[in-house]
Image (cartoon, rainbow, N blue to C red; front, side):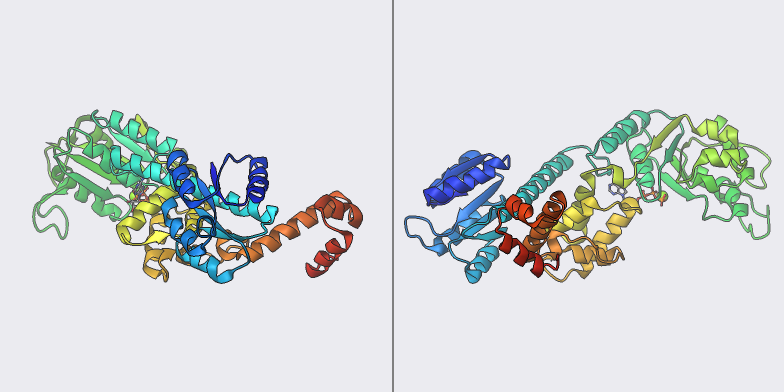
Length: 441
Ligand SMILES: Nc1ncnc2c1ncn2[C@@H]1O[C@H](COP(=O)(O)OP(=O)(O)OP(=O)(O)O)[C@@H](O)[C@H]1O
Ligand SMILES: [Mg+2]
């Protein structure tokens, strides 16, 4: 809903009519006190505020009123194009301004932006409130796939079954493994991660299962393997797709009965370890080309959890960004356009990329708020070619709008100037002048 505060009845009626025609609900009031009261009662999303209203018709009183409407965006209207007053209003927290007489097209654009901004702010506040009250298991996100993922984690955690976590790089597979461990009966035991791709193939066996002194060159003493270290807890086999085939057989055996043989030992040993494996690779392809054992694949395939791409998580992008920013720089905040930009970007590097970009932008940001430019720089992207509210001045935006409407009307009428002018409510000469200015002739 929009609260329109203006003391001129004719202006009030006209403007309210335009806004209602755009599908907005509108409440009108004629002075500052009534505006406060209406705001408290209706909690409008956006406030359109005339700065000079009764009893004193003093714009400074109007400016003092702006902060009373927080957090709703306030669009101030000034009786004459008073640039200094408008800037003062913006400094006092106004979201935007309109000069009277108000152009209906401009009103439409400015109000639409303000409404969008209010919607985004409300959505974030709701998400943040939910995030802080819900058991998020260290996995931030309220989008349906993340809610479903947490529900699955809760279900698989108490079983002692091996779990496979699949998903693209940077989507939180390691966090999922940690969440499973933390929600399991083994939570008090250790969680031991092994990066199968980072350990040289010939050392992986001794790393996992340990070795006896003298079992190979360089084995100067007995050494416990990571399965022993993980006894009573969880072993996280990250990038299991990189595990060499010879090791896969031994792992399969360990999965079957919990027994293993340290390198150089004769007897088998036992360890009570739960296995969680992860990979960003397509294991079915690895099975098909023979680099991953089919039997091990089926043993692990029992419980598969998939982490979704960040681009599938809707409003989680903005939520994650807010939380990463709060952790990195508690006093910093995003410009509203920056949050919109984050929400619209695809983030091929997923959560890891988003986190790095937010942390980098927080370190680089010059102003009070992190801007789109800061983020563009932090992601190493070239500047966006499309014009966004952030890099458009109000005047640019009006010109762009005018130009678009004229081009559309010209196309519709087959470039008939008379019809175009009529459709746009302009005189023919007025249209031609505008077209000249825009280089459309
Ligand atoms: N839902 C989430 N909430 C909070 N932080 C997250 C979330 N998902 C991922 N992260 C963060 O993103 C980064 C990458 O996560 P993680 O290392 O778990 O990804 P991964 O899927 O294991 O990636 P890779 O395949 O490259 O190893 C980490 O800094 C992690 O803390
Ligand atoms: Mg990982």
